[in-house]
Length: 169
Image (cartoon, rainbow, N blue to C red; front, side):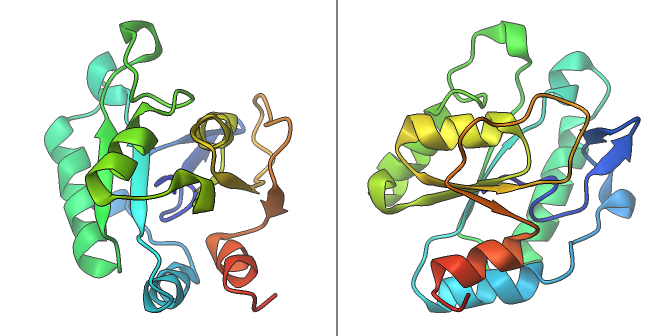
């Protein structure tokens, strides 16, 4: 799953989502702890895959991103967090919409991506999930940007995605 907009609240300015700048701005979204715990209890591996290009752009500090990731990891039932610090022009394979980080996580954790789910709030998340062979859940906040073309599910939250995944919906 993605981080900003899925696990924690994205900061929306002019219709566009941005990551929180630091731990003080980090807010876990309602229903997320419960959804993750239910997935964890169902023996799902919970791996966050996040783009953090503001580090490469010099507008965010890597240490702040790592503090937020550590806080989320310690507060929630997560198994791993994969972070890409590159910008679009860097040619990095781990930067979504490319599936490199998902493929790396699958190798590291022995995951069958065809039996996996990618939950995201941006077209990049959905495209990465599709390229990796995952079922995709798009949390539609109606950002003022390109929308994904064919997610498997359109949902309003991680909690709704969890309910579909675990058959509660």
